[in-house]
Image (cartoon, rainbow, N blue to C red):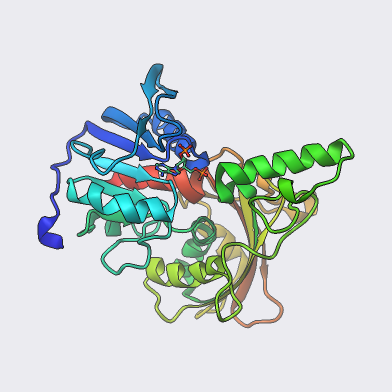
Amino acid sequence: MLTEIKHHTMNQQKHIAIVGATGAVGEEMLNCLAERNFPMSKLTLLASARSAGQTRNFRGEEITIKELTHDSFEGIDIALFSAGGGISLEYGPSAAKAGCVVIDNSSAFRMDPDVPLVVPEINPDAARSASKNIIANPNCTTIISLMALFPLHQEFGLKSIIASSYQAVSGSGAAGITELEQQNKLLSEGKEITAENMNVYPVQIASNVIPHVDVFQENGYTKEEQKMLFESQKILQLPELKVTCTCVRVPVYRSHSVSITAQFDKDVDVAAAKACFETYPGIQLKDDPDNNIYPVPLDTTCKDDCLVGRIRKDQVLDNALTIWVVGDQVRKGAALNAVQIAEIL
Ligand code: A2P
């Protein structure tokens, strides 16, 4: 109910909370807040009862992690949620009701018409109209893809996307990273990988690729693949945009790569496409195939900017470009994007 929502008056020095502070994205949120010298009066770290009492260092200060409860949000201005959709659904409304702006990394609220879905380089103004005190951080593959597609859309007018993703295990959180580490260790020791080493992925991820990210839907696509469609339409305000996507998990630790064929309203030109990226914030061109220069996941690991390369005129579709974009899933795909949204507020 809108009438129940309180809004704090935002001043320069905010009280920030991280929900899921011990997770892969939560830890990176801590790093981003520190590196960007985010102006804040206080930082509260929240996680499950399992982690309560542990400490994390932030700008030289030891902060004790507290257990997340419905009463955790009194006096907090902005809460960055990254503890999974169930926790967001359960605790996000309590936080919003307490007057705190929730920036939610899960998919729980993304398609709610009253919840802005924001990539700060693309639609920053949307973040200022969070009538429910909730702002959603888009899906990581969608963010990284749109970082490359938005400058092209401005130049040529985007019509459709055909994409295949190569997604890092960090997208499955700390447990995904641990599973790949353990399986790699077993393989290097010449040992067998058994069911007990497969808790996150249905099949072995080490030395393998899995064409399955998130759950399958009735139409044969996965939920992750449909996020690319619905979230791109919402962020770009292009309800007619067509998207087909195959999302693939690869044995890479942190950065996602996406191969995209994008069709446009206007005739495309490779030189003009490359020029789009020269001044655009958050994305850099790395495209000199004659010298084996193109983006690879290790280039963006622990970096803020996404990289785009392999830009060529598509030889099947008219008015289309085929490109390759890479970005750190934990940073721009999640933690950094959330912190950038907080910076807008
Ligand atoms: P905890 O470490 O205490 O379980 P990841 O996405 O890397 O798997 O991280 C998930 C994050 O969500 C962790 O910080 C985890 O905390 C947190 N989390 C999981 N369950 C709960 C819960 N019931 N209450 C609060 N935080 C939770």
